[in-house]
Structure formats: C-alpha cells, structure tokens
Amino acid sequence: MAKFRKEGGKETPAISTASLPDIVFMLLFFFMVSTTMREVLVMVDNGMPEAKEISKLEKKSLVSNIFIGKPKDQYVATYGSEPRIQLNDKLANVSEISSFVVAEQESRKEEERNMITNNLKVDQFTKMGIVTDVKQELRKANSLRISYATRKKVK
Amino acid sequence: MARKKTPEINASSTADIAFLLLTFFLMTTTMDVDSGLFRRLPPMPPPDQVIAPPVAKRNILQVLVNKNDLLAVNGELMQIENLKEKAKEFILNPQNREDLPSKVVKEIPFFGQAEVSRGIISLQSDRGTSYKMYIAVQDELTAAYNEIRDMKAMEKWGKKYSELTEEQMDAVRKLVPTAISEAEPKNIGKGGKK
Image 1 (cartoon, chains in turn cyan, brown):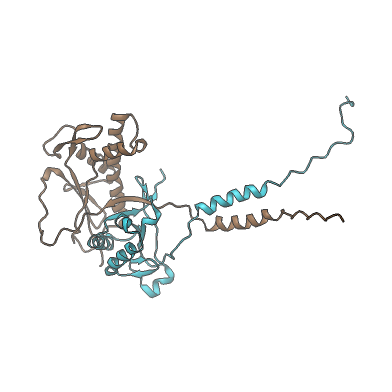
Image 2 (cartoon, each protein chain N blue to C red; image 1 turned 180 degrees about the horizontal axis):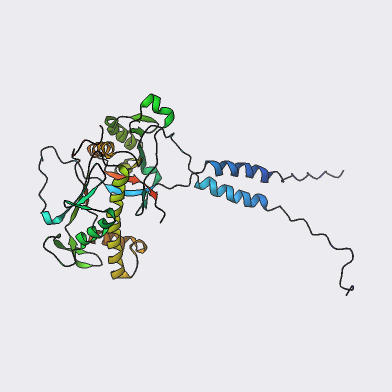
C-alpha cells in the first residue's frame, strides 16, 4: 500500500483569487444599473397602503410624483401636523398643483406630454378629502393619468 | 544593453476597490419599482354642460364609502370581502336579469360580435374616508375586473390575461372595459378637514 502514497503529503494549493475582481465587478455593474438614486427628500410620512392587483409603472421618465401625508416629525414644528402635499422638494398647497403639472409637462418632450402619469404616493392614514382635492385639480389641469402607489400585499 | 521589462502592475487591490464601490451601490440602491393601481380620471366637463348625461339605474352599481370606513353597495351595507363577487355579478350579469346592466353588442377583434356590459361602477367616497379603505375598495374592484378578464382569456385561449399578446389583451380590454367612475366628491359628513 505504501507504494501508492506519495512521499511527504502534498500541500493543498492556495485557491486562486484571480477571478475575484471579475465577480465583484459583475455584481458592481448589476447594482450600478439597477440602482435609482432617491431624487427628492421626502418630507411627509409615506407609508403606502397594500393592494393585491397592482401593476407596474412602465416608463420612469414619464412619472411625476405627488406625495401626500403628514409632515415628518422634524417638520411638524414648521408645517404643522395636518396632511400636506409635497411637490418636488417642497410642501405645497392644492392651488399650486396646476402650475406643477405645467412645469412637469414642460420638462418632457413634446410628444410625450400627455402621457405623464401622476403617481399619487399617499400615506395610508390620510383622509380622502385632500386626495379628492388633488384629483380635482389634476382634472382641471387635464392631466388625467394617475396611479395610486401601493405596496404589494403579501398573501 | 538588455532592456528592462516593465514590471507587471499589481492588480490585487482592484478587488478591494471594486468591493468599496459595490458596498456604496448596495447601500444606496432602492430596488422598489413604482407600482400601483392605475386609473384614468374623467375629463372636466365643459362649463356649459351642467347635467351629466343620464344613465339607466340598472347600469350603475353605487359603491359608497363613508367617513367611518363603512361600505354600502346600492344602499345596503356590505363587508369588503363580498364586494368582489358583487361587482363580478354586476359586470357579467350571467342570467341577463332585469335589474343588472344591459349589454350592447359590439364588434371586437378575435371575439367577433360580442356582448359588452354597459355597467358602470360608481365609487363615491367621503372627505373623511381613510385612504387605506379607499384603496382596499379600489383593489377589490380591480380584482373583479381582472378575474373576469382572466376568465374570458381562459375561455378563448386557455391562457391567463397576463400571458396574452398585446393585441389579445387589447381585445379583452375592449370586451371588459374598466368602468369605475370616481364620482364627483360630495360633502357627506364633515369628517375630513380642508
């Protein structure tokens, strides 16, 4: 038997780490592509309700976000605790929506202007009153595509 | 004179650099795709038109949500779990009952002459209704439409609605059009604050 045994047990060779950078780069590119930087600082509570029958919003560039909810704790002193509307990065009144819609349309290409979807990100504890006001304003501004942002309900 | 070979650049630190970048993107990434319930608002009626065109009573399913988040369908209290079945019965009207919506025959690609329901679901909420409840109701109504579309797609192609091609989806959408009217808000109760 000793015949088969090699003299002086061979050492296990070190695992080559030469391909490690490649693997890491692959992961890196994946995250770089899939990442979306948060563009605005959300100043209102934004716990979205859950729903089952949701559909994805397809074109990200054609979505304009409208946040509605109570101001976050650190802003309560300045803005009060009543639900407010946030357009871009500042809190606004209902009357400012029409100019916001126009501004959003201006920033898109001509042929895509009436394809903008208003993504209503409303906190689940908000009352419908303010949401209805916003919807009426959107109707007046003739920006009719809306989406109620929701989270997927886990069954 | 023998030229000195350029020494190979030590590449062992690329992994570290890449790891650093990777961690950065891992931390900042938000994977959430915007998703939600898509709706199309009705256009504002022209100012000279005051009265909306009348719709036969049988063609309307009135869904009311009050400020206490109670649900009423055609004037009767209802649990939200039962809303989907009610809506489905309303849209399909399988027995052609007199008190459920009438149908109109339309030419639809793939289906030929097909009956399309005239029913409209009128969803009315109060200013004091919670958004959570409102979305729950919207979700149930969407579920009703989606199930009917799935059913029609199953009958015709043996596939689910979501697995159809663009044209087929379009045809099914014409056969079962989403008709949820988010009626003009009415100030029933003073639950919500302006």
